[in-house]
Image 1 (cartoon, helix red, strand yellow):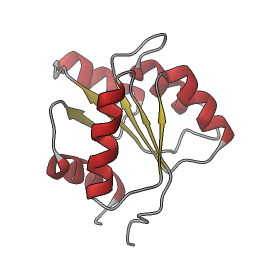
Image 2 (image 1 turned 45 degrees about the vertical axis):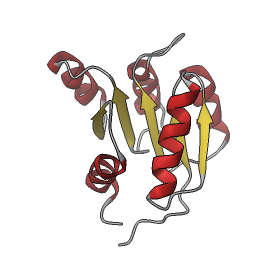
Image 3 (image 1 turned 135 degrees about the vertical axis):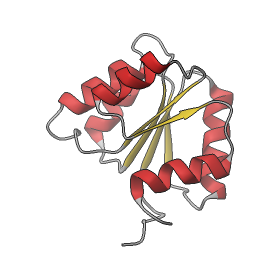
Length: 128
């Protein structure tokens, strides 16, 4: 089954420049239905108001981290099946393990490019 390039994607990062970079990389891959949230609290509100097909979230944010957002999503009956990709500047094994235990679908370490994003998203969504 082909991946729907019109899927709704929510990107979450407290750094506006990073949001722009991720949005541009997604656009290079053909995904244009992208919305942004500057923190996990706002992201969770958006997730409750609208159906998203993919969440791409930074790890290090306040007031709740990407890991805490992931746990909230996985604990929510309506949201628990939404694919979740974590982005972080840290590749500590403990972080990767914690994210996997919390139900992350994939993990991207900064810096990354469109090719890396495509490989990671293909592993989660299938070929596109």
